[in-house]
Image 1: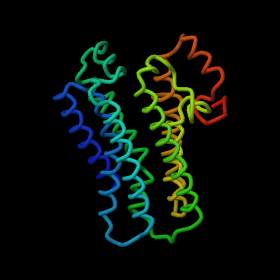
Image 2: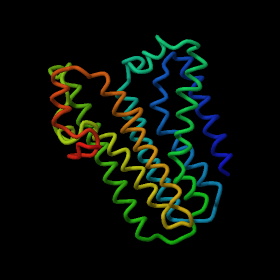
Image 3: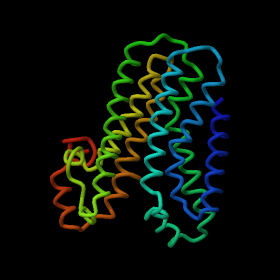
Image 4: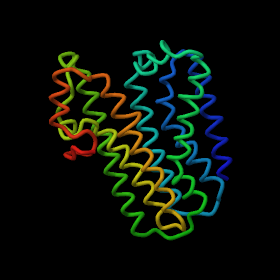
Length: 252
């Protein structure tokens, strides 16, 4: 069953890669990121026809998150061309097409497979009644979903105002965290993983929130975006006063 999910992800990301080459925009992978998790959730759900409330709840939550994120990224990027990160790679990488396939699309597919682990684990193996961890999972997921949605909404409205061009967003949730949307995203996957903790060996799915948290905080999220603003006086002031990830917590 795990092999089937891996092949599904490989096929999906390969198709997204082909589409990206047709439209000459590798950043569309960000739009298809959330949709890929929905595909995994639905595919794994229909493999077992035995009714189970936990499976339906988790699949619904993943679909809710994935649709919102994909729509948000689409609206944010519409008409702006390729994102600056992907454009930079297009301009500097040798063997660009092959490297893009491996380093952008296949690599993201690997992370998708790992991060989605609690989703297909639950859909394959859930037979236990709902319990404490399911309730906690819903609370944590809901908190993360609200934080990510509000942060994205606040930033989008800020950027719509021509008077804010070139300025930093430092109000709302962005006053207590430099990346509240990333923090909300991490909470979402902690919440999803908690749904697996009532199942045998469900603790193994905690690799999902650990990986996404470390990626967002130390690899592809915070560091990559903050590199763009390094050296600006307003940015250095903001950086010195505001927590990077967890609100109010400056050491992480």
